[in-house]
Length: 375
Ligand code: UDP
Image (cartoon, rainbow, N blue to C red; front, side):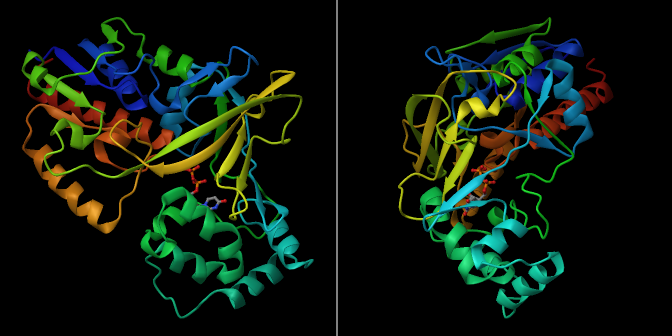
């Protein structure tokens, strides 16, 4: 009878799988190397300001996925929150994602939707038929001026690479709108967990049958003690980096505090080279239902992830994907281990996608166990 499960990592992937398997009667041990659950979504109150801090940078929950939304709402109240990002470039403030106000202010126009759409069509480079790179995608759909003002420099700061070297998929995350909707996300549901992400993940994970070991690294050699391991750590670390280190970007945050309202908005992007950081986050605006006199800010810097750093964004250039393929081959040969989540599969995943995938992984595992008569 398959009973003992080890889960490596207590982020959304690990927490959701622990929850689902424990409910199905399994005994689950979760191993988390950090002193807290929730991975990079971890939030905690800043002692000095009382503000709920997104410790590893801003996280806004948004989804079209009914199952993921229903799941998270079972474990936390979600407060309405709409992410409206501002961008500073060439000494002016604009709204993002690129929308009718951005276009009109940028070009000093008073276009209506159809006119703006036609105008952007004239700016786009139609010779690029099938955009592959970030740069081609931008030039094709918004033209050179908007690309250079909003995307080019920000992307170099964020990724340390030229947009001509990055995949179009990164830019496809951002819509272009021909109305005045400046909601950064286009999803049906959007919100913030009332008591932060860590309280939410804690509730998901706190099930009878689940034991969480914080500050504990899982040694892959211990795999034999368990019937199955779900691993949400970096896939290359499981194999002791046998195929080399998969590259990541990491983030540094310069923290500062002020009294009152520092920037009037949760997120302001700095899209040109006037500032070395990519964005400033003012955390109290992520909890608009709370009142705080003092404020805490993060100026965010992105750089290449070194061995000692916390990995954030998988880079996924063509050569990284070849290296990843070699790890995927190794992973397929591994028995009784499932690789999950952003680090386990080396993909740029939003929280809702991570949760949905973890639910599907749990379903499949339980279905398989039932078929084998192991439950
Ligand atoms: N981006 C940009 N300028 C901006 C915002 C985003 O060039 O003002 C690009 C950048 O390459 C970024 C990508 O679009 O990595 C995706 O943006 P998103 O806001 O989804 O990034 P995240 O919040 O996940 O870092």
